[in-house]
Image 1 (spheres, helix red, strand yellow):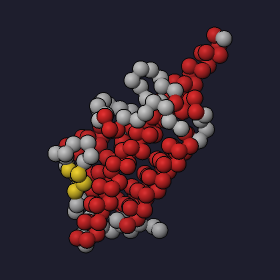
Image 2 (image 1 turned 90 degrees about the vertical axis):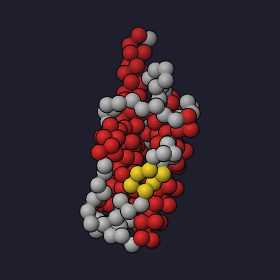
Image 3 (image 1 turned 180 degrees about the horizontal axis):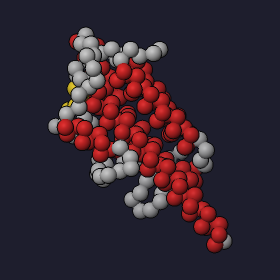
Length: 195
């Protein structure tokens, strides 16, 4: 299906690229490099992907509810979602490499030891679910309904803004996962040289 809405088409392209990036990164790792943490309080590649799974599990039902309200309203898209100043600042701040640090809520912190295959399978499934949701939204106004944030009860944002933020968040943590893998590889080379 080729979306008629440029905004939806762009989100679909982003989700597909994120999914391919995660599969390329994780599929070539064993459990040790997948779970290796580059330092105290720094996440492994596996933790980064599991954090994204946790976040998508929280966001997707809320996005689906907003999508249902959007379709029910029948409001057609007149253009891309207009993110407000604060949302643009937040989305840009999420993009890698990180410019700001954000505290992760306790419910969104991944366990320290995760298994690669189930994490990657869930990552792929959740992103496929998001792709299906986007296909259903083609042609609709992504600013017509709000999404309640699972992170802060006082925060609500447009569905299009929620999707843009989720994509930036995914890229941020995939960048972090690549950094962890690179640190593991660099450390492995140093360990071999000193052995």
